[in-house]
Length: 283
Image (cartoon, rainbow, N blue to C red; front, side, top):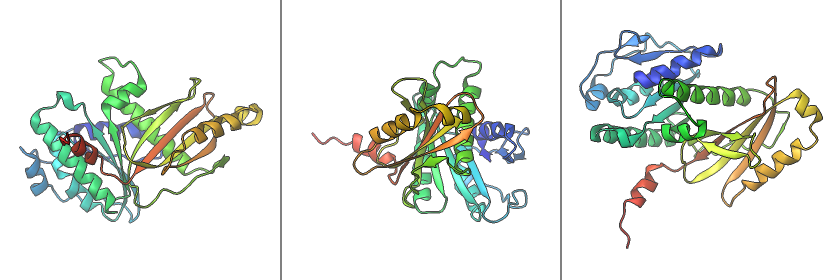
């Protein structure tokens, strides 16, 4: 479910997979659910419509809500989440390039991002996954102007989808550790298995990580015949172990020719705390 233009575009991109039913909420007539346009962030919060009749889900249904905080319509996100309180919500939060944002957009983004992290930490939703468009762009590589947002959106959707698939599939082998219920602030990423050093490419610069999970997708032929694979995976995972961070992994059989590795990093820390500390003059 997407709120606002960016959220709707990402939600719509999930429709290529049969596992998802998608909804877009925006002020445009092209949206699945069109709401009245408001002039301010505060007005969306105050006048956000009741959509319960249009959003009829069974209690406990898993719902991914996508929102970009710099948009004025993001002022209604808490009202929307309240109407979905009987569902299991993972919030996919998109942080745009703030260097190009107006002062109003930067303020809106900062408020929404931090309020939603506190909302997640309270247990009101399952988790918030933070994605920074600049970090995502660096992970993907060169992106053409005409395909810029479509390429970024596909990168998000494909990664989220594969993590969901692995979470709901039995692992061939693994050492999964269930994340702490306090670790509800997270980001996702990929590991470039084509490179010798297996470079991690995270979609957000998350600080204060407490758990990291790696999901390996390997085809049956390699699982059967590559005698070095288990040692390589074990060595890589061991190299990521640090004090205070639990690291685990799972290996899953796929039908893809190429090897894949997706990852999640969890924290209990609201990420703005680092920003606030960086702003302090302690000299």
